[in-house]
Length: 268
Length: 268
Image 1 (spheres, chains in turn purple, cyan):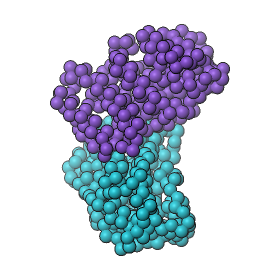
Image 2 (cartoon, chains in turn blue, green):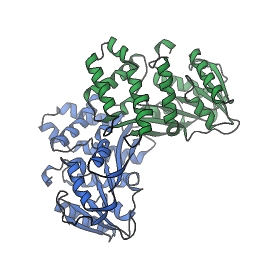
Image 3 (spheres, chains in turn cyan, green):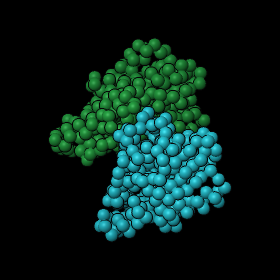
């Protein structure tokens, strides 16, 4: 996966979206991840470090090695981690399919919002598994765009979300991967696989999620593929605008919004 | 809603399905419902008592008054409760829109898998609210068939589930009501409304849910509307059989199955 074909792109708004998402969802996704003092953790596909800050905060005495294919993302992540004051993270540019580490050189693997972008997710997991010591763990977190629904829901709103799913699929990814984490990890040879869904439910009584998740994370992500969806002819502009407007309507009082992330834990 | 137009029917298999469902899901749905000693609880739409047993067990010193429109269901519920040895439940046949109780005569209301079958769910909630004392609570639990998805998923499997949704809608119900509990309760005048989703996630590491939920609860429920779906022309027999077979495939190793119930708590 090169810079050019990352579905979410590398814009400033995308950086802000990732930061909003990470802050709002960090407790839901990361509260039960903490690595012991002295352990060596490989974070694969760290991007701009949106999850890395939570990883560093949750395991202050572990050494985290964070890798990404994109040099500019690694540099942004380095800046973010330095600004936040963490000193337990090392960064490296590298390809998940060909990482420059010795076999069994990590105690734990952490892979968040990465597998969804890979055509060969099982092969990536197999290669990562080689880097893990016997008895070490992998934690994998992914969303599943097919888990999204809202009230009131309209066919146009569903269609706009399907555009994002279609575009990610055309780029070789799978945005419905959350539901597949269990079979993927089993197929890659991991053991004791345990998946726990982390559902985000939003209504007017949860204003921080209305802003931080529904608007600034999910709808912003869908809006991010507008130009691609239109230029590929997946949807017409009128349907698109109606779909986006309908999604915003579901963020108003009386509306609800649902989405599920999946977190998997497994052992070598 | 008369006996004849209850979407799930009144067959022996349906009774067993409801019992399997209640046992498998009881902890997920009911673990946090317990009423204090001496309180008076109205369970509205008790059916054959599948939830009543858990209500009686969870609040042994409360008095539970369980009501249903169907005399045969009330009799089945009475037998079930007597067999289980509970003595804190009174039964009555009655219509949710016209119950023979005084205003403010209950401390708590409990409504589980009932609102989905009503055309006028808000009106039913308004009338129930009158029976509640000031400061009393309502607990409402509903599923949402639009929250279902599986892996591997096929268009035929989705179509079979849509048949169930369509048929329930034609009968005046709404099987997508889970996501609407918050606005419904607010509109009916309840306060401090809080909804918590209860997601059922099933993979091969959870064999009790493969049997108790995926097969015996959800797929059995879909299979229950086969004849109606075919006679209404909502689907052709080949697509139906393929859809059901595909759903069973998602219960085999490598498959996953997801569904979400919604539990709401609110005050008068």
